[in-house]
Image (cartoon, rainbow, N blue to C red):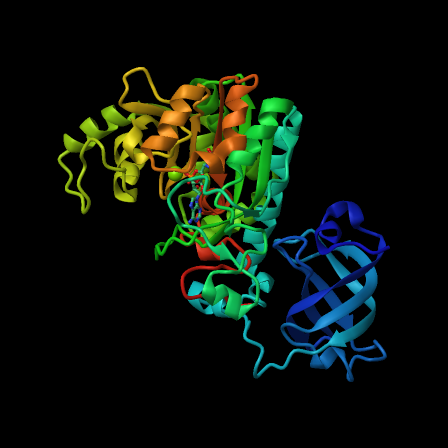
Amino acid sequence: MKLSVAQARRPESIGQEVTLQGWVRTRRDSKAGFSFLELNDGSSLGNIQVIAETSLPNYESDVKRLTAGASVTVTGVVRESPGKGQATEVLATGITLHGLADVDTYPLQKKRHSFEFLRSIAHLRPRSNLFGAVFRIRSRMAYAIHRFFQERGFVYVHTPIITASDCEGAGEMFRVVTMDGEKVRSGADEFFGKPTYLTVSGQLEGETFACALSNIYTFGPTFRAENSHTSRHAAEFWMIEPEIAFCDLEGDMALAEEMVKHLVTDALESCAEDLDFCNRFVDKGLIERLQFVRDRAFERVSYTEAVALLQGCGQSFEFPVEYGLALQSEHERYLTERHFRCPATVYNYPKGIKPFYMRRNDDGKTVAAMDLLVPGIGEIVGGSQREERLEVLLANLREQGLEESAYEWYVDLRRYGTVPHAGFGLGFERLLMFVTGVGNIRDVIPFPRTPGTAEF
Ligand code: 4AD
Ligand code: MG
């Protein structure tokens, strides 16, 4: 029976005849007439030990040539392992060699490599312990996100990747053009009849579906041409955007908090071996922090309170803290790491620093916006209640100098059966940085796209 390495490592498989397929991590030859192979197929962090006896017909011709990176099919019997730290091992009855990996050039030798080096071999880094762990956690978190929303009756909506509207109004979009250089240069390249861009957010299209199906979420790639060289910004990243009809800011914040807690809980339960590895080799306080986040209530603070708190805290910051200015990462981190010492949601931001679609509060100064901040990173969720009042929305568009005609369809939602509604965007890579302790966004996405880099 074909088993994964993860399955063969479980005591239940003892006694079974199995086929395993994967890549050799190490080979060690014993004087007692056999070799030990450590085999890994990506199904788990741990390898399985394979015992290859010299009596195998291809022992000299193949087994003795196996080195790190070589690919094999192993048939054999799972038995209890006398070795420490493993329940099972496999006594091979046959080994088929698929491909060798040259010892002198294979870049992933058995030693610790730097993140920077591994980034330069992003096509091979999933074979390393750390990246195997990170990308298994990524996969599990994607599944847990779908489950979280599906179990609560949210409908998954695929919003377009090519769009004509700038949701965030920040002008950080990539333009979509054809290969016709002449037309592009003359500005006549209008494949879609108007300028189009890679989406920065599926929110506006998502809102149309929320105003029909009530609760929806999107989960897809988004693109931002912001030239920020930080460890938390990528030009291509994945975002999860729920939109909830008949919901206000309070309900929005509650859902974001519940989701973050749910994902952390799921990771602790489902990714224990991989998280333990991250805890040992990436961030020694990781598991303790995740357990703390799982068990403790998050804090909430209004933007106005947060500004007062930062101004009075006695700490000096690189960027100024002043009502009306955006909170910088250093401010967000002070709030979660030093002041609250836990995740915190900041809400009711000044309208001048937020997009047109956010709902104006009665004070006339602030909008019903919220950012969920976590220690070590800062913002991982940004959201708001949406402006559902036609007149106010039109005034916002005008104030922000946006073409009303470009948002006709969006404004229609306020003309026909408007409802209070709210939503947020969770940056998937930011969540993964938080869950794995990995400090750079480039190391939680398979092939990172950042200013100046689009390798692979
Ligand atoms: O706060 P943002 O810009 O919000 C929106 O896009 C809204 N339309 C969401 C909504 O209400 N439906 O982005 C949401 C999240 C941020 O909190 C952050 O986690 C992540 O997306 N994000 C990025 N992640 C990686 N690289 C970037 N350049 C990012 N920009 C935003
Ligand atoms: Mg934001």
